[in-house]
Image (cartoon, rainbow, N blue to C red):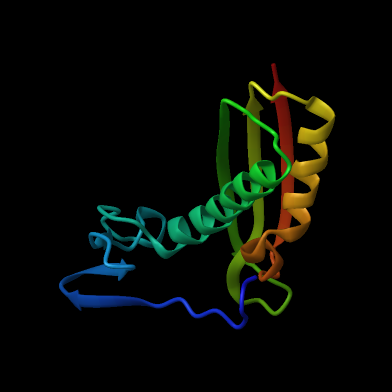
Length: 140
């Protein structure tokens, strides 16, 4: 049983460029994206945001599939985030569009149900105020 609350930590260091570190993994180079006048020679906060939502979904699906004895050969995902002015005229991430393609499933009906369950239980997606659109494809 998981004991809540859980804590996750990361660190960042800037001296010219900057990097972010979590879980004693290698540092990830960060940069201001070209869309905001930066060099784009590293991951932007917007990249991390999109990857966080997509990765949370994929990891959650893996857990649900294992618990349900659903086997599959591949889950592929892509994400596009939209940055715009919100209702308060502040710049924010206003929309997240996620697409997932599931291949080689043993039970298509179970796979559809698990994709929906994952959508409803993705911690990161449930924690943001942006509009979120999910598109699923299941291929044999």
